[in-house]
Length: 258
Image (cartoon, rainbow, N blue to C red; front, side, top):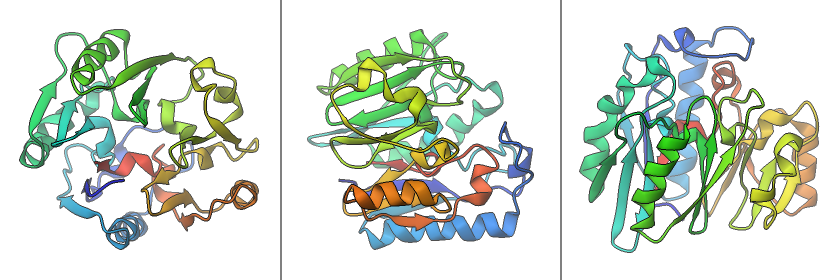
């Protein structure tokens, strides 16, 4: 499913980043260890990982997914560089642009008043689902839809206002036809065509899993969700995400994949 990924080493300033989790400040040594474990799963899955250095100026820069959306196509991949809705994060796009350009055949950049963060974008098959919220606006979605249409992709806007920072905070893909999803998103018409596993109340964080094709990663520490996954035939690798959770980060946030 994926053959390449880009990640960025966590900055020691991570604890100064944006968060509403209320879980305290991350332990930097543990954060670094968890990040190395994360990269290890990609390597085991046969995915080539580019590891970028930390950028202390941008505490949230480890969450590289928000800076771009990768657009796989028959001859390789293009990239759509975003303009994060969180103003403090906009410089992260400039920091990662060169690394993305080296590995893609086209880079498209958000223009004007368009806003987007990659955590609001879910790709299922040939359709991108784009959350419209405080971080991604309608103009950003419109620009993105026009860009990806050239490569044969459809875009479905998913407006929401439920306090979640991103669409994928509480939903993600388990395979090509199944979503793991919180109750607050489960009834949305946009996702009516998919099989769904609805995470139990209180375990909403576990709805951010990462499907790599040959492997499935899920956050550790959510026993009811783990049981549901097992009952439905999913055998994920469980990974400790405690320090990234403190900063509202999940499994998908930590990488760009194509």
